[in-house]
Length: 53
Image 1 (tube, rainbow, N blue to C red):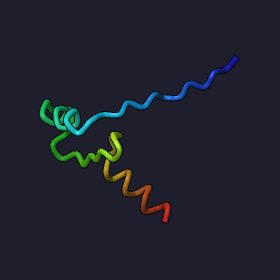
Image 2 (cartoon, rainbow, N blue to C red):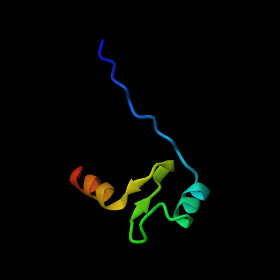
Image 3 (cartoon, rainbow, N blue to C red):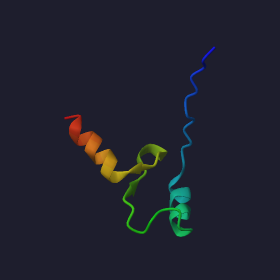
Image 4 (cartoon, rainbow, N blue to C red):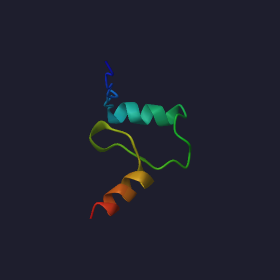
């Protein structure tokens, strides 16, 4: 049997997001957004939003 395993989503808080930035998890020039607790590369998110119009 071939089971399909879905990736688990881990929502984070704004405080956790800021802590990740402080310890250097993100590149200095990274454009990251946190809509509804999920991390998105802003450039990719904007491209998808623009294409869906």
